[in-house]
Image (cartoon, rainbow, N blue to C red; front, side, top):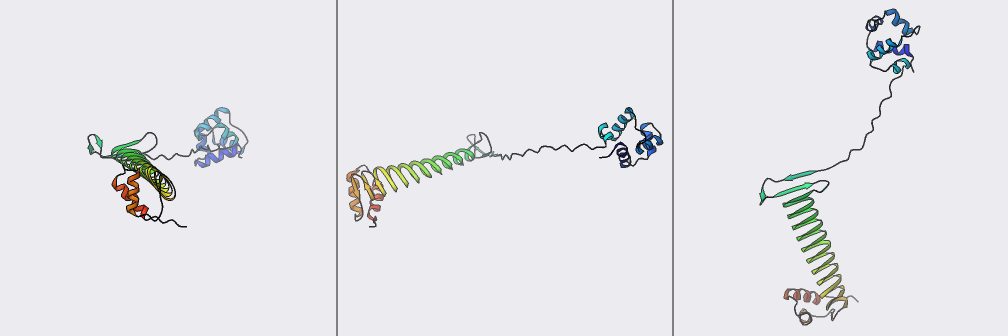
Length: 255
């Protein structure tokens, strides 16, 4: 730490001033400046204030010979926020042909083709998608694809629809690891009329472990299986009876 005399000399030399030049600025003689720098005398308060203004430092810094500690500015981590929106100028009855809308908050893409966190459109793609054809983690539509999907035709880990495909599927026709419907096919299938599976439970049960009014295992022809189906469930559509009877004919149970 420097004392006043050393600090004064340093400040003067840093600006390239002679003792005489500094004296002129402060209204004192060169000899007075020399005595201050040699520590023989000290300036009065008025001159200290003038030097403080001249050098742009505080009197405390000047007298004690210290430098102000740098101010450490707290740096706050910046939060990354991604937001993007595009809306086509072409519209159909006031609805954008294409609307893409991503970001935080209640942002929903609405368009004939909609893409976003939440998307509503004829064709929609998003985390939550609703549309005639929809793709999303949660999807609902006439044709739906998603982790959880609901629609006339639904594909998903968990799906529900007129026709549903998924690990867990429920619908008029359900296909999945666990399938439940009027007509069901799966590892475990439970149906109101016909079920096919490793475990099958329905009025007409086809498979290995079966429980039903009529149980069909191996060794049955397609014609026999179809007759059984139509006798037990007479309202079964012909194409569905053909599908299940064909499966029944090809069942082979390992002993």
